[in-house]
Amino acid sequence: MGDVLPTLRVAAIQAAPVFLDREATTEKASRLIREAGAGGARLVGFPEGFIPGHPLWYHFLSASSGRSRQLATQLFLNSVEVPSPTTDRLCQAAREAGVYAVIGFCERMPGKTGTMYNSQLFVSPHGEIIGKRQKIMPTGGERLVHALGSGDGLRPVETEFGPVSGLICGENSNPLAVFTLQALGTRVHVASWPSHFSETQPMLDAIEISTRALAYQGGVFVVNSVGLVSDEMIEMLASSEEDRRFLKRRQQENGGASIIGPRGRFIAGPRGPGEGILYGDINLNEIVTRKVIQDFAGHYNRPDLFTLTLNSSSPSLFRTAESSSQILQEKGTNKPNSPEEPVLVSAKLEGRSGNH
Image (tube, rainbow, N blue to C red; front, side, top):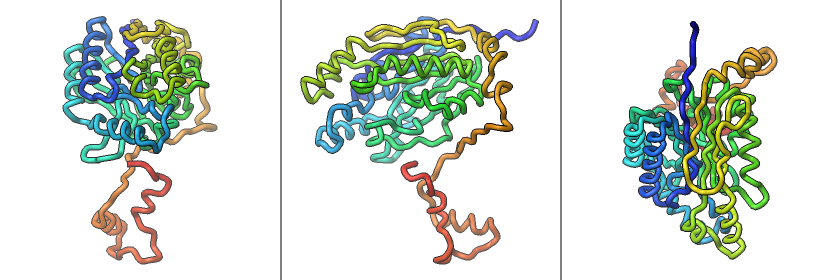
């Protein structure tokens, strides 16, 4: 009889956060998780930086303005530690709904008072955190508040229906990041998107071009989850009437949540403007049909010609003298560093400025 891969329902969230309000947005996310579960979804994806919102003000305000600094401070004070009461509530919602959830959020390290990351959290139907990753390269104004992510989270998480992965916004166009996940066997991929790009970059076109290609080349299903602009956000972000008109257009025109199959075709969506949940039923056997012909992370490639190396370690910014001495002892010497010898901490940090 052979193997039969399952068919399951997935859900793409298209919604705006309660901007810069961690508790209220977490409550909204929990409600959407439960609603998606009630709708039969086994996996639900959320937009980029959904909790508590994305630093969109850099599209409209000077980076050094008092208002920008005030909003950046609010972003940090409403950012999420892992684990925390916020992640506990999300885990509870996933457990009650019986779904896997991939949630975009602004992350801060426990005990820190300034460093943030643009991250995705992976939660299981058992209410457990099964993965977390950080955007490896912040885009545009994000670089003013988000640090560079490390490679230790750039991998799929295991589920009962196979590996599930995620990337954030422009990462979905990064061929090396995408190939890494293909090589690690991802079957369903959650692409998390913000509410808009700039005036000159139509976001809906970018989502369709990048993720239809991702699905086709990787032989995977893609869940595109898209952020929206609320009336409250327009009032907080706009610094001029021109800004207000731009944001109103984005509010009236944007959307684009979709579910794409491994042949690059839409299964559901793209969804039009307005908040909601887009559902799609996916048959994982279609991956086999696609990859039997072309598996770019397998038989349809040439490892003797092409290889990709991922640094999956989590870089360390700080080490004590004791740890450096221990390394020297393991190398067979107790001699301290002389002025001519390289300092171990500096060597460790070479090429890693900005990581935590």
